[in-house]
Length: 219
Image (cartoon, rainbow, N blue to C red):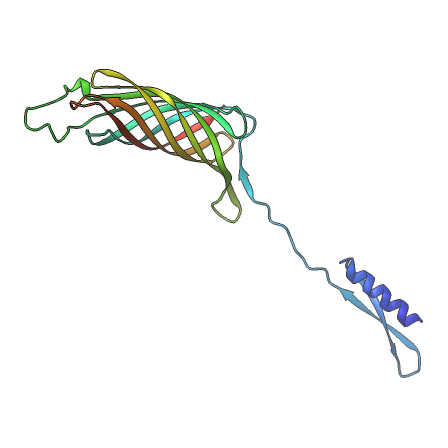
């Protein structure tokens, strides 16, 4: 009966994962019983904690961006500007942007024949967009370092100043954001600025494609 009790005790200690000692019986030469201790070893498993950059309670975001914009019929040129956002909820945000560039020449222009003056080639815009975080997630840089990130959609309206005229503009686009710390983010954005123009003799809707990257801070 003692053997059954010791075996049940051993099974119970193993199932609880506790470091303990059980006993087995062994007959000695003189007929007495010798108790031998058996050590149950618990595996040394430690959970690893990953550091995760995230935003605290800040809802305002502002920063700058640089990139390239393809002005339809006038080539692809460098672009720079500033942006600001208000994060109304975890999923939705409002964003305003201001950007500047300078158009090149069209295929109709050569030698001293110019459709636009130098000042008319100045290209600038401002807009107000509504954004939606479509795929929030995480970006793993190393085993112990993780950044919160999000793929988002934006759409809205604005105004484009080009060729001495002001044009009502519709804007759609996408973006990708990585939160580097609780106050700093990196953004990669794609935009299509659409407006009508009669500049080359007929009315048409132009698509002016922008690809830009920048840094913003939360406050």
